[in-house]
Image 1 (spheres, rainbow, N blue to C red):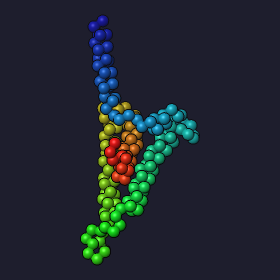
Image 2: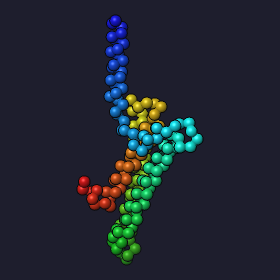
Image 3: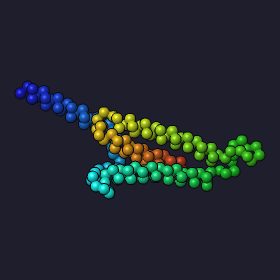
Image 4: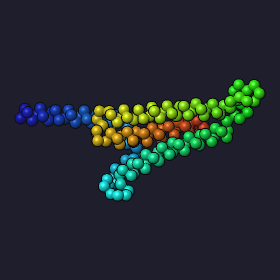
Length: 160
C-alpha cells in the first residue's frame, strides 16, 4: 500500500507541475487552432495546408499594414518640411520616418522570431508541438504588431 501511495503522490506531483507549466506558453491563435481539426493525411485541405495558409496570411496582413502606413505617411506627412533645408534640398521628414521604421521593423522581426523560438522551448511545451507553438506565437505577435502600427496613424487607438 505504501508503494502505491508514493507512486500516486509522485504522479500527482508530476501532473501538478505539468499543469502549472503548460500555461507558460501563450495560447494558440484561434485561426491556427482550427487547423488541428482537419485530417493530417488527406491530399487537399489537410492540417498542414491549413497551418501554412494561416501563417502566410498572417505575414501578408502584416505587410499590407506596413504598406497602408507608408501610403498614409507619404500622403499626409508634412511635405513642405525638410531637415537641413538650406535650398529646398533637405531630406523630407516622411523619408526619415520610413527609413527608421524599416530599421525598427527589421529588428522587430528578429526579436519576434527569437522570442517565439524561446517560447516554444519553454518547459511544459510538448516537444512534438514546439513547431506549432512557435508558428502560433508568430501569428499572435504579428497581430500585436499590426495593432502597434495602427496606433501610428489611427488616433482612436492612441487613447484606448
